[in-house]
Amino acid sequence: MLASDEGETKDEDGGPLWTNKLWEVWGIFVELASIYKDKGLKEDAEKFERASTTLKDNLKSLYSVSDFADLPDFCNVCRCIAEQYLEDGTCPLLEELTELTGTQIDDELPVAKRKRKNNDDNDVSVKEIYDIFIRLSKAYDSKGDEQRKRAFLLAGESIKNLKKVTCGADIVQLKNCGKASVEVVDELITTGGCERLTELEKELYSYDEIVEANMFKRTEELKKMDAPTNRDEAKAFVIIKHKYLKTREKEAQAILKTMDEHLKVIVANRLKKEGYFVTDADNIQCEHCENRRDEEDKCVTCAYVRLEHKANALGCQNLPDYSDY
Image (tube, rainbow, N blue to C red; front, side, top):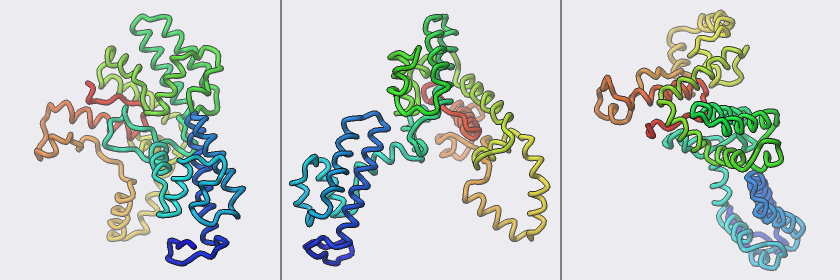
C-alpha cells in the first residue's frame, strides 16, 4: 500500500493515482532522452529511451517503488529518478537540463559567457552560426591569415543552407567543415559564445567597434523587414524609427482618443510592467556609478553598459563581454 501526494491510500493494484504517477515518470524519461539526443549524447539518450520503453511495458506489474529493482534495462540512475519523483514530485536532473536549454537568460552573466537557453528545438539558428563563421573569416583576413580566412568562409557557405543545426555532429559530413568548425558549432550551442572569435576580435578591434558593427548590421536587417514578428522586434523598430511605425500611427492615435487621461495612465503603467516600454539607454549607469547616486561623465563602464543595452535592444547576438576590454 502506498500513500499518494494527496494523502490518500492507493489499493494493491496500483489504483488510478499510482498509474498516473507512473505515466508522469515515463514522460520524464522520454523528455530526458530527447534532451540528451539533441545534445548529441547518444549513450545517455539510449539509456532513458530503454527505461521509458521498459516502464511502459511493465506498468501493470508495478505496485511499489521496490518493484523498480526487478525491471530489465532500468539502471540505478533511472530507478533513483523514478523513486524521487514518486516521493516528492520533483526531478532535479530534468530541472537542471531544462534550465540550461530553456528560454530564459541569466541576466547577471556576461553576454559572451551565458549558457544558451534556446527556443523549442534547443538549437542555435543557422543564420547565427553562419554569421559567426563569416566574422571568423573576416578576422583572419584582417590578420593576413589567408588559409583560415578561406577555411571558415567555405565552412560558413556549406552551413548556411541547412534548415537546422543542433550540434557539431550535424556538420561533420559537410564539405569544408573540419574539426575546428565542429568545435565552433558545439561551443556556440553550449555556451552561446565563441572564444576563438572573442580572442581574435579583442586583438583587432575595440569593444565599441565590435558592438557598433553588430548594431549597424542588425539595423540594416531590421530596415529590410516589412513588419515586426514579436514584441522585441517591435521595440527595435521604435529605436531605429522604422517606416512601419507610420503605417500604424493613425491606428494608435484612434485608440488613444477613446481613453480618458486616467485610463491612459493606467494603461501606460500596465504596459511598462509588462515590458512594452523602450528603455532609454542614456539613463543607464554601471553598478559603481548607480551606487554613488551620481554619474561620472567619463566612466568607460557606463559607456559600455549603455552600448550593450542598445545592441541587445536591437536584437544583436554574440556580443563580446565588455569586462574583457
